[in-house]
Image (cartoon, rainbow, N blue to C red; front, side, top):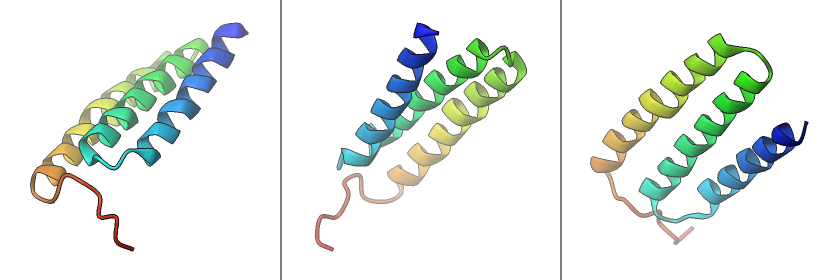
Length: 81
């Protein structure tokens, strides 16, 4: 039970950090970390197939796509809105 609470707190913390950082590469790393912790939570909920899929697609593939997109654009978020 306590491990679920720690994992959920880590998911929320990494999501908030991903939103707050202005450096898009660091935000992408925080999203990858959130996805890894989310896959841990799926494993704790006894859904290992979903955990493996989340780790592969959420943490690896999505992160790679985001990094490729960031390389083709500006790395930092525009603050003038």
